[in-house]
Amino acid sequence: MREDFWDTRTGQVCNILGMLAIFMLAWEAAVHFLEVKQFLLPPPSKVFLAFVKEPGYYLLQMMHTLWETLLGFSMAVVIGILLAVGIVYSRFLERTLYMLLVGMNAVPKIALAPLFIVWLGMDLAPKVAIATLVALFPIVIDTVLGLRSVEPDMLDLAKAFRGSRNQVLFKIRFPNALPSIFAGLKVGISFAFIGAIVGEFVSAQQGLGYVIVSSQANFDTPRMFVAIMLLAVIGTALFYIVEIVEKRVIPWHVSHRTKASHAGH
Image (cartoon, rainbow, N blue to C red; front, side):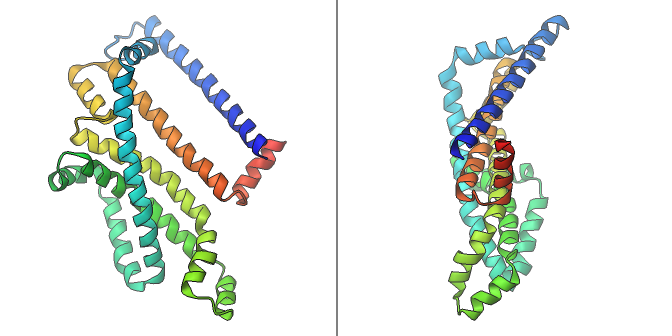
C-alpha cells in the first residue's frame, strides 16, 4: 500500500512538472513573439536569472515567511481546538464566542493588519497574530462540526458504560472528528500563509511579502515574479504536507480508501 501511495505521488509530481514546463514554454514564447514589454511581464528565463543572481537572499526571505506561517498556524491549531471543545460542551460559549468568531471572520483581515501593527509593533508578533487570526475560523468551525457529528447511539452507549466526559471526548469524539479537523487544518494552513503575507505587505523589512512590495516600488518585475513563484511553491508544499500527515493519521477514512482503490486499478 505504501508503494502504491508513493507511485501515485510520483505520477502526480511528474504530471504537474510536465504541465508546468509546457506553461513556462508557452509563457516564454508569448512574451517574445507578442513583444511584451519585460517590465510588464518578464519571460520565465529572466525570472530564473533573477533568482540565480541571489538565491541566498530569496531563500532567507522565504524562511522568514515560512516561520511566520508555521508559528501562526501552530497557535491557531491549539487555540482553535480548545475553543471548539469549549463551544461543544458549553451553551454559553456557543451563544457568545461562536457568534463572535463568525463576526470577526466577516471583517476583512487586511483592515485589521494596521491595528495589529499599532498593538504589537513592527517585528514578528503582528505577522504571527494575523496568520493566527486568519487560520483560526476554519479550524474552529470544522472541529466543532466533527465533534458534534458523533452518532447519538454511540454517546448513549458510552453513558450506559459510565464513561467520563474526558473518555467520551478523547476516545469517541476526537477520533470521529479527525477527518473534519484535518479538513480545517488544510484550509487553515493556506489561510495562515495568506495572513503572514498580508502582515508583510502592511509593514515588514523581511519576508517574501516585503520583497514584492519593495520590487513594486522599484518596478523590478522579475524580482517580484521570483517572490510570487516561491510563494506558490511554499503554499502548495504546506497543503500537501498536511494531506500526507492526514493519510498517515487516518488511513482508514473512506476518502483515502477510495483513492487507494483507484490507484490500484
